[in-house]
Image (tube, rainbow, N blue to C red):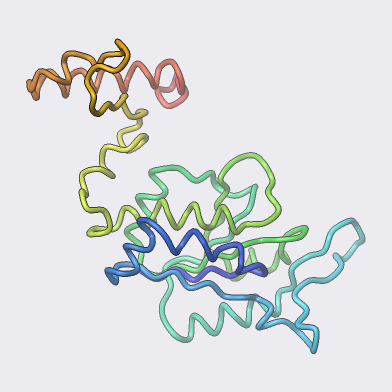
Length: 225
């Protein structure tokens, strides 16, 4: 999988892709994230990428020409399954969406900035719009990094224990149950006996019950309540 991230602030993405699971995916040749500075495709000697909006109003708008030029160049080099725009009014990102995207091939992610992007980009070039929640950030860089992380960690071979991703919160529509490690007794705070029993069936039943109860209390909407 290759993900091309388009931004006017590439320095904001220098850290997330250089560590932990994302770095491991790159080192193993399983995924590649390439960050593009949109200003390299800007207009004129000042490499302009934004302008005032028609009709007046506060805030600058990212221009269509630089975005179209970069997207066209990338599409001429390889096939892409999705051109994604990170925007507060997109479809809210969740685990099922991450699962679906992990089955894709190459993707382009556009990071909005300023007041947004020329709407013609969204009408004619973008295939998917994603939001990470009902709030506004300075730009789409952090949301793009979150999407990359959530998707790439699901690729076969990225995680040392592939079953770990399958037991994450939301994979079965429930929150994950509590987890514990050594020591079994710390300051009198004890690990539940069932987890020390070695009885696999009882442990599974306990975890399922805990997952359901935590979801009922914390995120009842996931249960349709």
